[in-house]
Image (tube, rainbow, N blue to C red):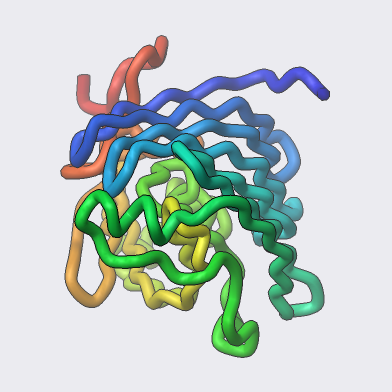
Length: 218
């Protein structure tokens, strides 16, 4: 396993949890990470993400595990088509039901055609994956005429802990001065990012911790 030169850590705000990722962003992105959360049931998530040099997702391997269950997913994007490979052990539905929650969907994709035109993955609760469209569209260093322009995207949204993949519409808008607005049909938040496009603060979701670099504006 190769050693990676950079490390980022986020503390969740919405639920007890965190995310730690090791990464190399010298030629697109290669990242290996771990996310932990207690909602809707305690679970751990491990992932490996690789993009092409233009920050288009190439493959995303992710595995989740909790008491009595485990799931895995591999997503690959090639020639505009998404392909999913999945595996499952135990019974996540039973665990969720025992905790008073609705059952989980099956891991993977029901209809890959729904993701035609999607270039990014979005992992639930992960600030790292917000960087993919930011870098792909160069919203971290926007041209003067791109500030305030809304970019409507289709993404492959990977739900945790089920690893169900659904199509989601999202909007990213460069605000300048290290800020990008993220929105969907029901939610909007102004993200604070560093000069490389990685999230420093995602209001209501997560904040970066253990970072040697000062926050923008500090």
